[in-house]
Amino acid sequence: MKILGLDICADTLVGDEMLKGISGGQKKRLTSGKLLVGPARVLFMYEISTGLDSSTTHQIIKYLRQSTHALDSTTIISLLQPAPETYELFDDVILLCEGQIVYQGPRQAALDFFSYMGFSCPQRKNVADFLQEVISK
Image 1 (cartoon, rainbow, N blue to C red):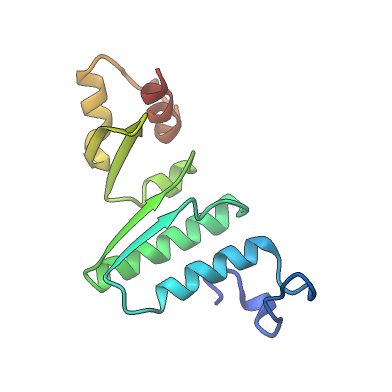
Image 2 (image 1 turned 135 degrees about the horizontal axis):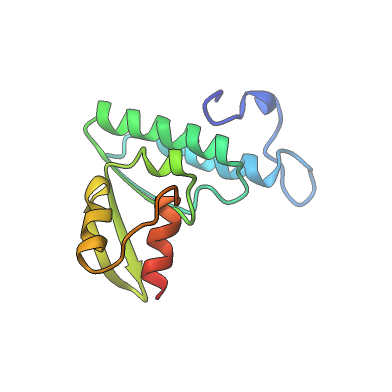
């Protein structure tokens, strides 16, 4: 609960239309938490950072990375514009443009691939932002 930032609302009901309950961001993190404690060997998580600050997103992705490695499982996460330190937590990336895979492979090889294709990342540029700009062209 602490990793997901839910320790502050541990004794609060989730809520519904009639009962206030936890916030929208907390509900999103609760849903992620329910997935993490289940028996699944593969997790598909879509836009888990919506409504979260970059620090909480980083903390969740870090935990997911640790548990994925420890349990020898697979986690596929869709994120838009991750912070640089969050992007660095990924082993592999899949970049999509208009439903087509533009790059799939090790995170560390993505810049070399795009450099080979004629797109060089400027120094001090956020790699995730650069990749998003390149695939948007």
